[in-house]
Length: 131
Image (cartoon, rainbow, N blue to C red; front, side):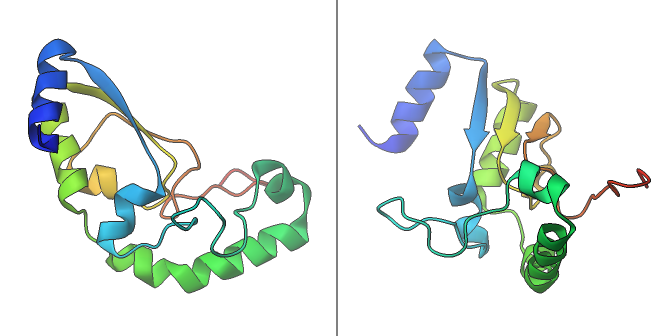
Protein backbone atom coordinates (compact mmCIF):
# COMPACT_ATOMS: atom_id res chain seq x y z
CA UNK A 1 0.00 0.00 0.00
CA UNK A 2 1.26 3.51 -0.84
CA UNK A 3 1.49 6.31 1.74
CA UNK A 4 -1.63 8.18 0.49
CA UNK A 5 -3.73 5.02 0.86
CA UNK A 6 -2.23 4.33 4.30
CA UNK A 7 -3.09 7.86 5.43
CA UNK A 8 -6.63 7.62 4.06
CA UNK A 9 -7.14 4.32 5.88
CA UNK A 10 -5.76 5.77 9.11
CA UNK A 11 -8.10 8.78 8.88
CA UNK A 12 -11.08 6.50 8.26
CA UNK A 13 -10.23 4.54 11.40
CA UNK A 14 -9.18 7.57 13.50
CA UNK A 15 -11.03 10.60 12.04
CA UNK A 16 -9.80 13.18 14.58
CA UNK A 17 -6.07 13.34 15.30
CA UNK A 18 -3.43 15.70 16.58
CA UNK A 19 -0.17 16.05 14.70
CA UNK A 20 3.34 16.65 16.06
CA UNK A 21 5.76 18.23 13.59
CA UNK A 22 9.42 19.15 13.66
CA UNK A 23 12.20 20.44 11.45
CA UNK A 24 11.65 17.84 8.73
CA UNK A 25 8.28 19.38 7.90
CA UNK A 26 9.89 22.62 6.73
CA UNK A 27 12.92 21.26 4.87
CA UNK A 28 10.94 21.18 1.60
CA UNK A 29 10.40 24.92 2.16
CA UNK A 30 14.17 25.47 2.13
CA UNK A 31 14.66 25.60 5.90
CA UNK A 32 17.38 23.10 6.86
CA UNK A 33 16.85 20.58 9.64
CA UNK A 34 19.10 20.34 12.66
CA UNK A 35 20.13 16.70 12.35
CA UNK A 36 21.58 14.43 9.69
CA UNK A 37 20.07 11.12 8.55
CA UNK A 38 21.66 9.34 11.55
CA UNK A 39 20.20 11.81 14.07
CA UNK A 40 23.48 13.64 14.76
CA UNK A 41 23.54 17.42 15.10
CA UNK A 42 24.61 19.07 11.83
CA UNK A 43 25.48 22.38 13.49
CA UNK A 44 25.38 23.92 16.96
CA UNK A 45 22.74 22.47 19.25
CA UNK A 46 19.74 24.77 19.72
CA UNK A 47 19.74 26.96 22.83
CA UNK A 48 17.59 25.66 25.67
CA UNK A 49 15.07 27.89 27.42
CA UNK A 50 17.09 27.71 30.64
CA UNK A 51 20.25 28.86 28.85
CA UNK A 52 18.34 31.62 27.05
CA UNK A 53 16.60 32.95 30.17
CA UNK A 54 19.69 32.66 32.37
CA UNK A 55 22.38 34.34 30.32
CA UNK A 56 22.51 37.65 28.48
CA UNK A 57 25.51 36.38 26.48
CA UNK A 58 23.51 33.36 25.30
CA UNK A 59 20.60 35.63 24.34
CA UNK A 60 22.96 37.87 22.33
CA UNK A 61 24.37 34.85 20.46
CA UNK A 62 20.86 33.49 19.88
CA UNK A 63 19.57 36.78 18.45
CA UNK A 64 22.69 37.22 16.30
CA UNK A 65 22.15 33.75 14.79
CA UNK A 66 18.42 34.45 14.40
CA UNK A 67 19.17 37.71 12.57
CA UNK A 68 21.37 35.82 10.11
CA UNK A 69 18.74 33.13 9.54
CA UNK A 70 15.72 35.45 9.44
CA UNK A 71 15.75 36.17 5.65
CA UNK A 72 15.59 32.43 4.91
CA UNK A 73 12.59 31.97 7.24
CA UNK A 74 10.86 35.19 6.17
CA UNK A 75 11.08 34.18 2.50
CA UNK A 76 10.08 30.54 3.00
CA UNK A 77 6.65 29.47 1.77
CA UNK A 78 4.47 26.65 3.08
CA UNK A 79 5.08 23.39 1.25
CA UNK A 80 2.66 20.56 0.37
CA UNK A 81 2.96 19.08 3.88
CA UNK A 82 1.83 22.35 5.50
CA UNK A 83 -0.95 22.72 2.92
CA UNK A 84 -2.17 19.14 3.44
CA UNK A 85 -2.31 19.56 7.22
CA UNK A 86 -4.24 22.83 6.85
CA UNK A 87 -6.70 21.12 4.52
CA UNK A 88 -7.13 18.19 6.91
CA UNK A 89 -7.76 20.70 9.70
CA UNK A 90 -10.44 22.47 7.64
CA UNK A 91 -12.06 19.07 7.01
CA UNK A 92 -12.12 18.44 10.77
CA UNK A 93 -9.60 15.58 10.79
CA UNK A 94 -6.67 17.43 12.38
CA UNK A 95 -7.82 18.99 15.64
CA UNK A 96 -4.42 20.26 16.82
CA UNK A 97 -0.93 20.71 15.41
CA UNK A 98 1.91 20.85 17.90
CA UNK A 99 5.13 21.98 16.26
CA UNK A 100 8.73 22.39 17.31
CA UNK A 101 9.28 24.73 14.37
CA UNK A 102 9.65 28.49 14.82
CA UNK A 103 8.88 29.44 11.20
CA UNK A 104 5.10 30.00 11.36
CA UNK A 105 4.56 28.07 8.12
CA UNK A 106 1.66 26.03 9.49
CA UNK A 107 -0.25 29.25 10.17
CA UNK A 108 0.74 30.74 6.80
CA UNK A 109 -0.70 27.61 5.16
CA UNK A 110 -4.00 28.26 6.93
CA UNK A 111 -3.81 26.07 10.04
CA UNK A 112 -5.42 27.73 13.04
CA UNK A 113 -5.05 25.26 15.91
CA UNK A 114 -1.27 25.35 16.25
CA UNK A 115 0.85 25.21 19.39
CA UNK A 116 4.35 26.57 18.74
CA UNK A 117 6.38 24.74 21.41
CA UNK A 118 9.49 26.86 20.89
CA UNK A 119 7.76 30.11 19.96
CA UNK A 120 8.01 31.85 16.62
CA UNK A 121 10.75 34.06 15.24
CA UNK A 122 8.18 36.53 13.91
CA UNK A 123 6.65 37.00 17.39
CA UNK A 124 8.98 37.80 20.25
CA UNK A 125 8.47 39.14 23.78
CA UNK A 126 11.04 41.04 25.83
CA UNK A 127 12.00 39.09 28.96
CA UNK A 128 12.57 42.33 30.89
CA UNK A 129 9.45 44.40 30.15
CA UNK A 130 7.09 42.01 28.36
CA UNK A 131 6.82 44.20 25.26
